[in-house]
Image (cartoon, rainbow, N blue to C red; front, top):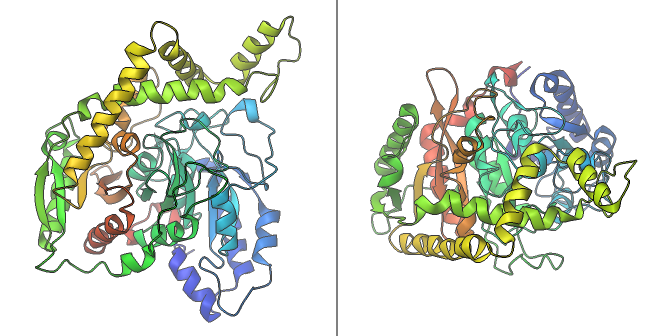
Length: 489
């Protein structure tokens, strides 16, 4: 079986009549049935709903933006079709009465959701090992993690089960699995995409974004899901460019206005895997050969990023997850003796150890006597980190650096040491703390055959320029032709 086409190819073939949408969707469902058992990328496959959408009559003369494109949806994004479990036992049987705005916009654009993908419980994890149901395995090597928390979405795209998938990114949850699985992972500016229907975890940090096989597909999906939403007060009424057109216009910069690519020397001098460092140096050379100017910038407060992020996100998690108490939402212990026992036993049995750990940390950071020392101080440092990025983007158009310090690690390698696991997000959390767009791009394979990745970041609402730079790199590197063995099975 040949590797599956990209989303852009599907749209073009549907437009010319060369592709039959129902048959295409059936092929996707067949691939999932044949290959997902070894990956664990999906929690629910919504075959009936997918067939219904695939057979819907066309509206208008021209096919819609994403006509006939199969897509997977991370299981913390609400859909009426299938469950929305957030990878947690406390929501094991929850079926949403509504679709998230991003899902609704995709379906209106002709896309066909085929299922819900696995994730670390409530998005709390960097490896894909913390789902309540089963781990997601890396398509390149089943003994290695797929990254988290959007593990299922990244694995499904990398393996060629679907061309595109929705994920969410709170501190790197799209970009880390994209890095480990060898696909493109796009986190938009905070407020660019509606969060309505995204089950809350870290409300001031998280954004719905895209996992795709190539930059053009990511731009295509971003075109469909971007824009303000009256149902989401955090969405911003900022004009939305044509991202796909921006990517198509990704010619090498002219002599009068060369692209300025910023690098942070401290990142390159940090404890990177040697092959990751070599991949970044290669990317610098590719941009330079394409006419870009390489400039060094400084992010002096970046060293406080991990502590700042985990204090803030844990505090928000403690607040957001207070509703799962066995009374209002979530798993309910069938035999409580008192109300306090009901709350305690329901949360203990319904929530996994990593979720409990973050709730406890967040509750402590918000408690009387510690609020000023921890949460307030972290909020002030977050402001300094954002100001660092604002100054950096006065001197460059995009920032280039690592997505992760190295390739995917083996299962169980970091689960016993939460701090080591948290450090997986070292290079991704800055975009979330500052609310900036960022994209992870495949940048080669290690000698052991595991994907390497680079990360580009842009200024606020600077997705178009960032995507142009990403496409410049991708065109020179030509990664989309490379797939794990599964994709050609």
